[in-house]
Amino acid sequence: MCGNNMSVPLLAEAVTVSGTERETAAVIFLHGLGDNGHGWADSMSSIRLPYVKYICPHAPSIPVTLNMRMMMPSWFDLMGLSPDSPEPGSAGSSLCQLIVCRGFMIYNISLSLPLSRPLLSPVKAIIDHEVKNGIPANRIVLGGFSQGGALSLYTALTSQHKLAGVVALSCWLPLHKSFPQASSSSANQCVAVLQCHGEMDPMIPVQIGAMTFEKLKSFLNPQRLIFKTYPGMMHSSCPQEMAAVKEFIERQLPRL
Image (cartoon, rainbow, N blue to C red; front, top):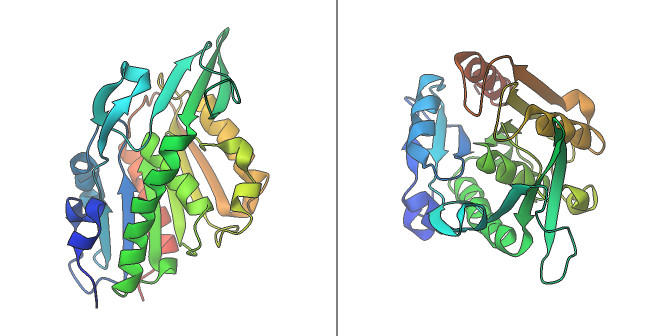
């Protein structure tokens, strides 16, 4: 064992649900916009496996353009959820958008490229820390909800560590137009991914999840991808979803 939590800022303040026996695997789970790690730590506690450590870090507070640049916990800046969000490549901006039709409106979810990439480093630093402390990368599942799920997907698909899997709840793939090129040197081109989405989600419509699933199938192994939807579920979770998450984690991180 080596290193300590203080050397990794996100890990130093993260909520950690420890295993009840020798820890041989880890789940790193990132919360959504404006949230913190406590709620998801409680959710992970309800489905925990005794040999798995669950790490739920808190995002730093940054100005979020979508919310009038108010300071709030956010993994990266969100530019807008409206038809007039800046187009990719427009003057003074560098954006990537995932476009979905919802009724008769077209919504653009825009991710600020300059802010997103530096925030990958602290998340990868948590993975590096766990590997240095004896948990192999192939015994780590990276996951998240909404914005946290988006960052988890992007981090995993660009990581040099071969991970056990990704849990992507109610989210999308950021910078999707950069794939598959962005993952060309990744160790996770055959990674297992569990995607879950509420069919009544008013924030990130289920169509976004479906489009993300289709995008992932275009450059990952389709047999390693799962997309589940839940009737009546909004931008939240439910017991059935958490049961699917537990089953996926147990399958990807079996007891040694």
